[in-house]
Image 1 (cartoon, rainbow, N blue to C red):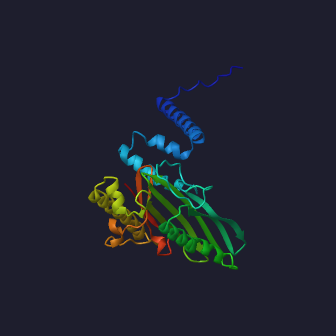
Image 2: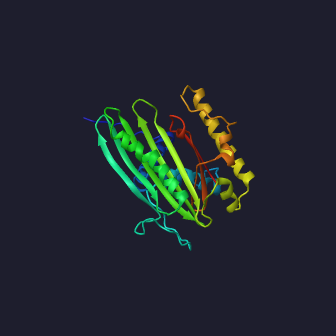
Image 3: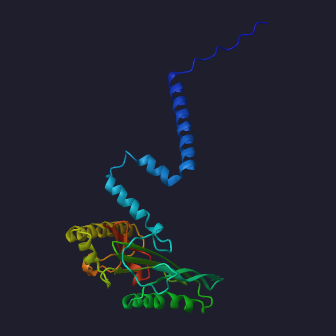
Length: 285
C-alpha cells in the first residue's frame, strides 16, 4: 500500500517577518523588566528619556530639585562651617536639635509622628522663634492627646542648614482632623548669624547677588504654569484649589516662607498655612 505524505508547505516571507518582530518584541520586554528590577522604575524612566528629552540640562536639574523636595526633611541640622562664636543654650547639643518627639497612636482617636525642633542659640529673637514653634506645634500635639474618637493624623518633620552664616530652618506639618481636608503647613525661620538679625527674602536675594526682577519673573512663571495646570483639571470636573494670580502674596517682599540649601533658595507657597488644603507651590532660584 502506497502512502503519500503531504509535502511540507514553504513558510511565507510575511509569516517570517511577523514571527521575527514578535520574538524581538518579547526580548525587548524581557530586557525592560530586567532593567526595571535592577535599577528601579524611576531610574529606568530617567535612563530611557535621556537623549529623547527636550529639556535642557538646567531644566532637568531644576525638576530633580523639585522632585527631591520631600527628601530634604531629615530632622537634623546639616554639617556646617562657620567662624562665628555662637553662644549656645545647651553646649552638649547641636545648634538645631529635636527637643520634642512623639510617635503615638490611639485607635479611632489620633496618630502622631512628630519631631519638633529647637534652635539652640542664646538670643532674644531666637527665643521668640522657639516660643512660636512651641505654641504652634507642641501645644497642638498636647491638645490632640486629650481627644477621643476624633480620627486625627498629625505628622511633623524639619530640616536646618547653615550657609554663608545664614541659619535656615524649615518645618513641615501634615494635619488631618476627622472629615476635614488634609492641611500641609510649612513654616520657615531664617536668621543672619553674623549680623544677629532676621533676614528677609529680599535681603537674601541681594546677599546672593541675584537679580530681583529675574527672581520675580521666575516666581510669576511657575505660579502661572501651576495655575494653568489646575484650571485644566478643573475643566475636567476635578475639585481643585484655585490660585489668584493677582494675589500680593507672590511678590518677593511678601514671600515669607523660604529655605536655603546647597546654594539654592526654596521659595514656598503653602496654601494649607491658611486653608484646609495640602496644595503648595515651590519655586527654586
